[in-house]
Length: 105
Image 1 (tube, helix red, strand yellow):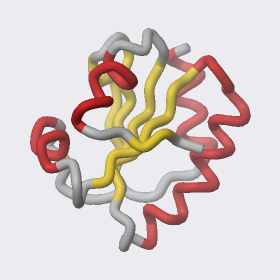
Image 2 (cartoon, one colour; image 1 turned 90 degrees about the horizontal axis):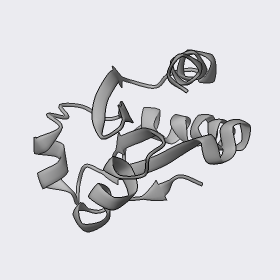
Image 3 (cartoon, helix red, strand yellow; image 1 turned 45 degrees about the vertical axis):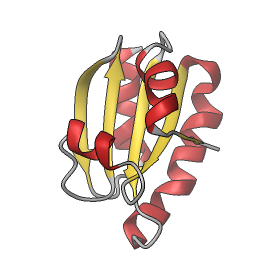
């Protein structure tokens, strides 16, 4: 299950993990966000320790939302070595995310 991140844990877990990182900026009331849960779970099962998957609730983590200029949920941001390498908005299929992961591992 993707780890929920706060402003306090984001730097350590997402920026300094040393792994390819996928951050899901989501809202509890967002239907497309709920559709992403099984997709993210599948990615975690497939890639295991090769990637880190985290979740940021846009309702509670306003500083991160502003820092990453998140305008809608879900917004999926890929980070590598602490730098943003890809950004997607809206619900996505696992295959599309797998392609990005495979290119960046």
